[in-house]
Image (cartoon, rainbow, N blue to C red; front, top):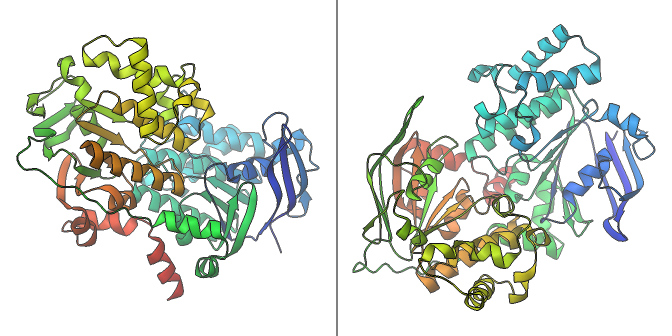
Length: 522
C-alpha cells in the first residue's frame, strides 16, 4: 500500500509549466531520493505536495496521502495536515527557526497547535522529542536559543519540530548541504532511524548523488520539471539509461588535472606564523596556527563545525582586532589597520545572494572593491574592468546591467568570483563556495577556479567541508580540529592515507558514490 501517490501533477505559473505530468509513489518506511540540478523542480514538487506554491501558481493532477486527495483539500484542511501528517525540514535552519524564541517554545508550538495539548503535556513531548533527536545528551535544553547551537544542532531542532507530531510523511529539502561531514552523517542516520522506527515515509531532496545513493531506497531524477528516470537505487545507477542521469554522475565524479608549478624563487603569497585567538568565554579558538600558501597554489582547509576554520579565515582577512602572531601578504605585514594592503586579499562567500545588495546592479556590485586600490577609477575604466571580469568568469558584458536575482545560484557565484578578482589580488579566501550548488554548477565553478589559478597565478585558501571538492581542486590539505592544524600534506596523501584518526573519521563520514554503490552490490 502506498503512503503517497502522485499522478499527473502539473504546476503552472504565469503560463509557464514548472512541473509537468509528474508521478511517483512512496511506501511507509521507505526513503525516496529526489535528485536533480537547481531549477529542476525538486523543491517545487515539495511545495506542491504541501500546497505552499507561489501566489498565482495553478496545481492540477492527483496527490493522495493514505487515499486522502490533498489537491481537493481547502486551505484550512491543509493547515491541519501540515506539521501533523506531513513534516517539512528546511535546508537552512537558522532562517527557518525564530531567533527570539527558545527552541522549546518552537517545538511546543507545533504540538499545542496540532494535538491540542496542554502546556504541561506539550512540555513533556518537547523534552522527549529533543531526547529523540540526540540533543539532550549534548546538554541542550528547551531554554536554549537557536544562535547558541551549532549548525548540526540547529538542524536537529528543525527535525524535532518536523517530527514532534509523528507525521506520516517527512520531506527533507537539502537538510545537510550546509553541514560538515560528521554532522551530515549524524543527521542522515537520525532520519534513517526515524523512518525505521516510526514507519514514516521520507522524501530526501538533494543534489548530492553520493548522499542519495547512501540513504535512499529509490531514486527519482528530475530535469526541467519532469522525472526523467526513476527506480531502485542500485538498479538505477547500474543502468543510468537517461543522458541527464549520466551527466549528473559524470559531474559528481569529475576531476580536473592540476597543473600547478611552484616557483621557489617567489615569496609566499600568504604566510601566517603562530596565530592565537581567544574569546572571553572560549579559549584556544586558534592555537598556534602557522601556514604558507604559494602563488598559484590552492590549499584546502577542512574540519567540522566549530573547529576554527571561519575564525582562521577572519584572522587571515584581518577582519578581527588582531592577536598574537603575524600575517604577511607577499612579504608585507598585514594587520587590521593596513588598509593599503587590503586589495591584495579578497574573499568569496558561501551565499553570494546574501553578500550582494539586491538593489545594486552587477556593475556596481563587482566594482565595489575598486576603492581599495588607492587611486580613483573613472566611469569608463570601471565599466571596462567589470566587463572584462564578467567575461573572464564565463558571463557576458551585457550582464553588467542586470540585478542579482536575475541569475541562477551558479551564476551568482561567478559574480562573486568576478568581484573578488577585480582588484587583481594575490590571495583569495573561498569560504564554502560550492556547498549550496548542484553537482553540475559545482563542477563548473571548481573548473573555473582551477583555470583562473593557473592563468592568473592566484593563491587560494579553500575552506570547505566537502572532501570531494578538495580532491578536485586542492594541491594541499590542512585538517583543523579544536583550533589546531592536526594534519597537513598533499591532497591525495591526506585523503587516501590519513595519519590522524580524526581525518580518517572525516573521510569515512563523507558519502562516496562509488563506495556506496559497491556496498549495495556486495
